[in-house]
Length: 109
Ligand SMILES: [Zn+2]
Image (cartoon, rainbow, N blue to C red; front, side, top):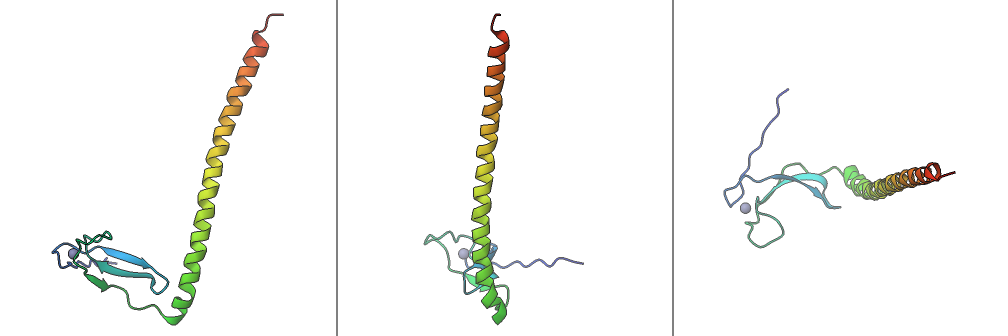
């Protein structure tokens, strides 16, 4: 198997990066855009689709899957944060346990 390489240049003369659209109208559809595009005005405005238009079923299902993915990603981020908090609490409880143990066994009888 050989991997095809596509090099397209924007009107600035730079290699146009291959990007992916995540809009409802073109979910997952790849395109070439200006290398300088960052939402500011100094770009040339170059734009060219790489993938053909998605089929009607893809247009119907794609946005739904993207919304579901966003919900799952935010749930995953929340779970990761919870795990971090629990690890800190576990560490603190071990420190507290050791301090209590040292105090108990170091007290003169
Ligand atoms: Zn450009």
